[in-house]
Image (cartoon, one colour):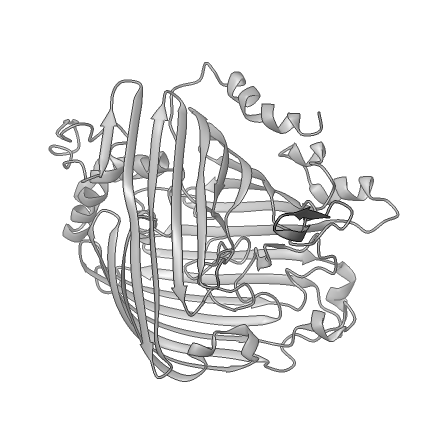
Length: 543
C-alpha cells in the first residue's frame, strides 16, 4: 500500500484529461545546443515567445516554435531561414509537417516543407510512430599533461501512440582520465563510474499529453534557471534521476511545472543492510537511505516577452514517499514545519527567475536561489543569507547580423546548496543539483558567438571563476562565514570553439583554450592544473 499512490498518479491524471485535444510530447535533450540556441534566437528577435527558465523543452514545443517561425519566414535573414529548414527536417515530424516524403504543403509558409531527416529507422501511421537512431561520440584532449580521450556508444528511440509518448536512450561512456567526478568544479556531466573509467546511463520515460499540458514518469536531465553558461537553480550536470513530471499551460500568460523525484543518497542504512554468505564467500549487502525531492515553478507573463517565475523545492528522507509532497501547488517548507515539529527539518529551497526580451535583440535575465533566508541578517554586517544569484544579458544581431554578445555573472554565498544532514543534501549520488561551482563562489562569463552559415557556430569565450573555503569541512559556525574571504581555487580560461552540425544531431567541433587553474587540487582534474593550452576535438551523434 505504501507506494501505490505513485503508480496511479499518472493514469488518474490522464483519465481527467481523456477528452482533451490530442497531443504528443517527449523531452528533447538540453545537450542538443544547436536547436535550443536557435529557439532562443527566434525569441530574441520577437518571432516566438518561450519560457527559457525550464528545460528541457518537449519536441512538440520546439516543433510549434519552428512552425511559428515558418509562418513569419520573411522576417528571417538567409542564414536563419536555412537553419529553420534544417531543424524542420527533424522536428517537422512532431508537428505533422514532414511525414513520409516531407513534401506536405501549407499555405502561408511559402512553399513545401523540407524533406525529412535521415533516421536509422522511422515508421509512422495514423496512430503510431517510432524513430530509432544510434548514439555515438568521441573526443580528444591534448595539452602538456599528455592526451586524454572520451567515447560513447548506444542507441536511442522515441515514439508516440495516440496521446502517449515514450522514449529511451542507452549510453555506455568511456573516459580515460575522469573529468566529471562529483567533487570537481566543472560543467562536465558526470555519472556513477564502474571499473574505474566507465559508466552506463539509461534515460527515458513515458508521457501523457493533452491540449494544455502533459504528465510523465521519466528519468532524464533537467535545468531550471535562465542562463547561457549553466543555471544556478538546477544545474543539470548530475546523473539523471527518476521523477514524476507535470507541465501545465492553460493560458498564454501562465505556465506551471512540477516534479517529484527519487534521489540517490549514497548513505548506507545499517538497519536494512546485511551479510550474504554463499559459495563466493561473505559479502555485505548495502542498502541506502531513501531520499526524495519535490519542486514546483509558477511562471507568469504579465507583458509580452516578459516571464516572471517563482517556485520552491524540498529534499526529504522519509522511509516512504510523503503524499503531501505529491501535491504540486504547495509551499513545502510550511508542510515540513507542520510535520517535523520539534525535530530537525528537511532541506527546503526557494527560487525566482525573470527573463525579458521586450527590447528586440536584447535578452535580460536573472535568477535567485534561496537556501536559507533570515530578514534579520540583512541588517547585520557579519552575517549572510545562503543565496545564489545570476544576472546576464545577450545582445544579438547588433551591430552585425548573426553576431551575439553574452555577459553573465554568478555569485553564491557560503553554505548555499549545502546541508548538514547527509540524507537531505541538495545532491544525488554526491553530485550537487545546483550550480557547478557550489557555494562560496563567483563567476564571470563573457562570449562572442558568430554564426556565418547554417548550424555553424564560432564562439570566443572567457571565464573567470573563483571559490572560497569550504566552511562545511572547517567545522565553522553556520552563520557569520564571510563570502570569499580568501580564494581557495581559481579557474581563468579563454578560448575559441568552432562547432558545426553536419546533419541533424551530428555535431563536430574543434576548440583551443588557454587556462590557469590553481588552488585546492581536489576540485579539478590534475590534467588541467596550472597553465595549460588545451586542444579539444570531437564529434557526437545523438544525445
